[in-house]
Image 1 (cartoon, one colour):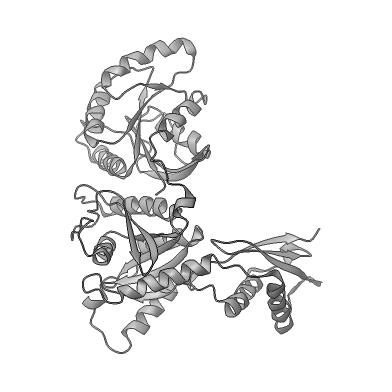
Image 2 (cartoon, rainbow, N blue to C red):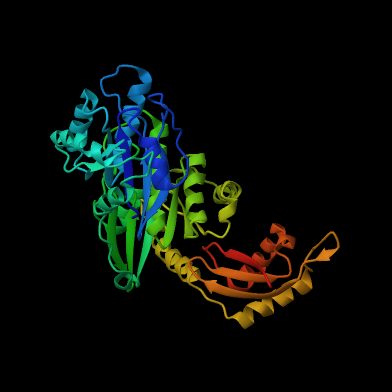
Length: 436
């Protein structure tokens, strides 16, 4: 899975400025008023060859009895549970204060790798101020100035040094990596446990009880799979919104690495915004996808029930019309064997290459049936199509003027390609270029 980094610390120590510098965009509100960032924000970042998800949190005000600081603390704890590496930011000019000591105690108990960052070190002569932070017992402090972009490279080297070492792609090229994603309590862990025939993943009726991301290897009919289960939280939480956002971060990290994303929806509930967000992540990342409706055994059915539910999925997840729909039960094992067959099919389609000559024959026939549109008397001319990559299948269209290619005609071309070549279960991307 893509590593997750959480940035935590007291209010007004510069967490949001640091977050924005790492991401390269001003996503967090940055003001001098303590406690401005009251929610967790997350984004994707890259340093050298490392890609990771980074979470910004509100300031830790551990001793406060007020509602908002308590909410911030709860969210920060969720972020810490989510993270593979925690960046603890302190104020080098203010020195150690009581809140730093309390936060350090919480972080040590988390068992996560901690990177202690001393911010506001704006000049070399100030670096002597940081040595008192050794007393926090969190290892060697890393001096930075987020505002002046000093020391950020060294800090990122230390952060990335805690990431797990990935196996070589050559070693795993025959393995289909499958991310089981979905909102809490949809039954993701139960599906994996039923497949394995043993309880390797914690299963509970409390949403979000999977403690860590679990990568499980499995072989069936000569094909090797790696199932990526997304992590939940370590404690019960009364804040549903926090759990949902937390699961979204883990889904992002899991989908980044997978070949096939299985989006699990609970048949006992209506399709929610959280379901659409998680499915949207898989679609936007260009991953092959399957929609698995779990707990189908618990639904009262007649001969129209599946048809009606499929129509709901196609309405709510219309951008994933290409994804096969499976109605399964992790409890009884209903149709779980079909899941493997669908995973193999959509993975093959995501890797499918079409010869250029055959593609252009389809394009010519499609244009003959439905001529390209004209804009203000200027006709669109499509000269050529070729496939340039897979996972997802990506095609370049060479045209006379890219602005003339309306999305509806591009969708028409996509539909013609799908009718001729299938591409079941995978999105298709187009790049449009002017011929000159």
